[in-house]
Amino acid sequence: MQKKQVRRHLKLKSFLIFLMIIIIITLIIFYLFQLHIKNIYIKGNNYLSDYEIIKTADIKNYPRIFKVSSRNMEEKLKSLPLVNKVKVKKNLLGKITIIIEEAKPLFFNRDSSIYVISNGKMTDEYNFTGVPFLINYVPDNIYERLIKELGKVSREAMAMVSEIEYSPSKSGDITIDDTRFLFRMNDGNQVYINLINIDRLDSYPLIYTILTEKGVLELDSDNERVVFKSYKSIEENKKKESSEGSGG
Figure (tube, rainbow, N blue to C red):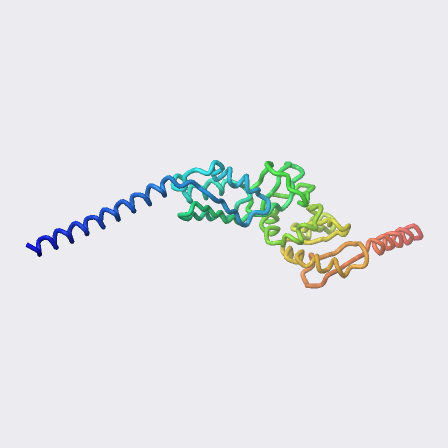
């Protein structure tokens, strides 16, 4: 008789423990499904505002965390021209973390009145400051290469460029280099460079610090040599050639 009572007691105890576990799990699930987003953390954005990111991800009203999908938010954010990559993470405390990798604006195309982004996308929805102007027409095949190569140039160097002009080098009617451009810098200097050597533009911030005069840099040569001609010397040569011509 005593053994039966012990068994019944153990069974009842096990049942109560099992019931308690079920209740706890149910409460946790209910809590999670009712849990709203409490905090939103955004990392990596320089051009995009936090508000624009939150609005595009469709979480500005802080909905229930299980009502929103990380994948859906990522797809919505990828629709923004400036977004290269995005990762959305959620945790069980109501925290959303959005990690953005932005593309960078390369230039404003004056002919079409649009900004060109390093990922190849174009937009007129933003107004970027400190972005150079492309001031003339560039053939389509060269234009595509320009976007690709400028995307590799550092932000520091690009921030020093004011205007970009397509300026192929010619000898008479013969084109020698159809990938050459003239970059007018914010400091008053000019830089000739071609797409093959576009990486040399990264050295401009250092070159600028050692220049004692304003002038023209030629970085489009096949060798590593940097050619610099001051505006003063260019003007003196013009006067000299003019006087020699008139004297002849």
